[in-house]
Amino acid sequence: MVIAQQEAVEVSLDDEQTITKQRRPLSRNGLVWRRLRGMPRFWVGAIAFGLIVILSIVGPFVTPWSITDRDIYNMGMGPTLRHWFGTNSIGQDIFAQTMAGLQKSLIIGLVAGILGTLLAAVIGSVAGYVGGTTDKVISWFTHLLLVVPSFFILILLSPLFKSLSWVALTFFLAIFSWMIMAQVVRNQTRSLRNRDFVRAALHGVADAQDPEPPHPPEHRVAAHHRRDPRNRVDDHVGDIAQLLRIRRAEARRLARHPAR
Image 1 (tube, rainbow, N blue to C red):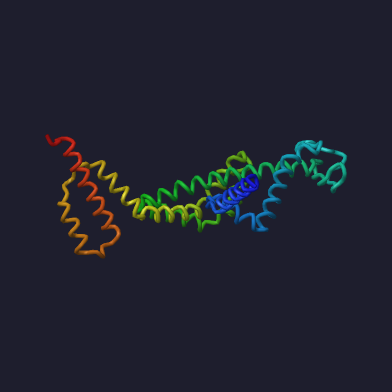
Image 2 (image 1 turned 90 degrees about the vertical axis):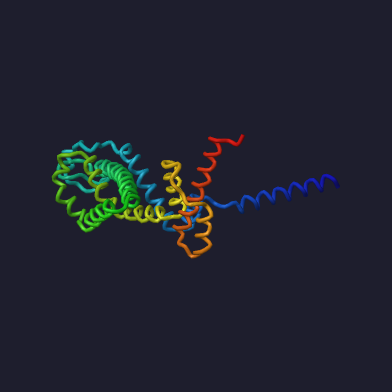
């Protein structure tokens, strides 16, 4: 009987722990993953991308031909068992060239995406936080690059890329891919800059730089709140910061001149 009761208590404790784990709030990454795994399009794209990456890694090792080798007896041939994708006009294996180009394309896309995201984060944050003339200039330049057809510019510059390495192409792609993300970061930064807690923190920084500015008496600040309860949020934040500065100044004076 006692053993049965102990087993029942253990089962109930396990059930409570399971319910607690299930009720635990998910993190942001957990929410994103739960949404993605329920989308068939995500799995189709993930599987296709995974196969492309695997093919780019394994492909060069499954063919005996390199991108510079020539088969002078099979020039301009179609797909065969010897050359899976055929050969070009000078006898080079097209499958080997495709695998090499696939590797470079993945590297260029990855590096250009990271550089473009970094540029967007820096430029958008500066424009949204500083504001004023800086924001206007950056916004004008961003809109200008959005209007300019970057694809045609890259086509015009393609003869230049032949004399340069693929790294130059990566930087050019990053330069023309940051504008939309920068606008998103700018708007988010402007939204956060105008939040109440950010303004309160700025008041605290100003108080640290000027420890004992002239303040009105505390009862005037409280009376101001009673007279006009419909003040804007900015005024309330400023008055609260003023009260905090008064309290800090009084605490510092008491610390310097303690009562005997």
